[in-house]
Each structure stands twice: as structure tokens, then as C-alpha cells.
Length: 305
Image: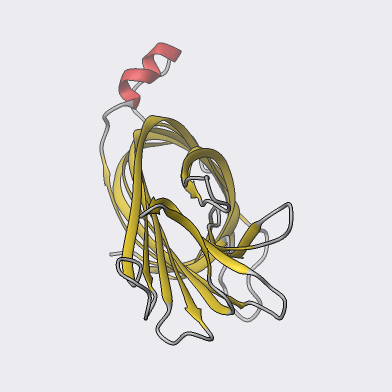
């Protein structure tokens, strides 16, 4: 099980004299699943070159690990206008001279999904029975999509679809450390001894990002071209990002080949992209890069072959 957090997006606008505000925000979190594969072999690449600089020999307990992980999470939210509300909609780009229009009583919803894929190659060095350090290379791609829909409650067939998507790609070295120790007890009724682990990592990365917003409006009975039209905007961004995280977990070896782990912690990203949607006429969708920190919770089951 996987838990993600992200910057929410908005759909529609609620007219408030002097201060228009978004009609509906997406959720800022999602839950789903995570799968992965880790292949480990004995080998030496990096550490034999580094350790002699510190007066150490190259005969170390070292291993190479190649792997990938993929997670998909999703969430949804909905809302309806109430008596006296004045909802309207602002396009990301003007269409035929129009950027904003009233939409009357509505029902609205946003479905959000996050796909994250990571591929890594780590050179691990076990210092003692408790500590392991590693360095390697890492690639991560995060895709976030918000699929919003507005339906009129008074004009059948009047719909607005808004899809906001962002893609962030990160590539760079990764440095990390892990501390593990068995706890001084066994789970009652079993001979299973839980293991505590604490992990931390940093990855200075090249970032390549892109995103788009597409809005499709259908208004039955309206004069062309306003009866069925679409507008779209997109943007790209290239730069530097520092990714990292800290988490702690409890794991247990259920059998020699099956283990389970419950963990929680934090991850941060100095440059995550998201669209800020326009609220009032004259505004445009902005593709912003923000510092982002999120909580991380995960329950996983591992199989050893």
C-alpha cells in the first residue's frame, strides 16, 4: 500500500465580491499500490576506489543492487453549488474573445492519479552489523493527472472537462545510509523478531519537466463555435532539483523467503512542478516550480528468490 501527497489543483470559480475563489480543489493526497524488483549481487565498483583515500583497504562487504519501483495512487473529490452561489468558469486561454462565463447551478468532481517510476543502481557497503551506506545513480519519473468534470443541473448536456497533467523526470547520483537493529523481543505467539530500520538519502538531480492543461466545453444550443470547443496550454521547464528523504520502518521475516515491512517518513523535492489555474478573467495558467515536502506511508510484502 502506498500513500502520496501533492499540490492540489482547482476547477471552476465561485464569484465572491472582491475576491473570487476556486469552486473545487482536488485532494492533496492519494492512496494506492507499489511494486518493485531488487536484484543484488556481490561486486565492487566504487568503494575500492574511495576507501584507500581514507586509509582503508578494498576488502569490504560490498554488493551491487539494481532495481525499479512503480507506484500508482488515486483519489477523488466532488462538490455541488448551493442556493445563492454564483459559479463561473475561466478558460486557460481566451476563445473567440471570451475567457470567462457563468455556468449556473453545477455538480463538479476531480479524479487525481499519481504514477511514479524509479530505476536505480546502487553500490552498497556494509560497515558493520548495523550500518550500511550506498551510492549510485537514480532515475525517477512522476506523472500527476487531475481529471475534472463539471455538469450543469439545469441544462442537460452542458459539460466542461478539464485535464491537468504534469510530468517530472529526475536523473542524478544518489547517496544514502541505513541503520538496522533487531528489537529485543519477539511477536507474541511466534518466534518472529521485529527489525527496526532508519533510512536517509539525497539525490542532486537534473530535472526535465513538462505539463499541459486541456479544457473541453460543450454547451447544447449555443451558437457556433461556442456549442463545442476546446482550449489548451502547455509548458516545459529544465533545471536542478535536490531530492531526499528520511523514513523509519519495522520489518519481520515471516519465512526465510517472505518479509513484511511497515514504514513512515518524509520526502522532499526542491523543484516539483504544478499548474496554478486561473480564477479570474485576465489570468493565465502558471506552470510553477515549488519546494515540496510530503509524508510517506507504506506497507509492503517482500519475496526473496
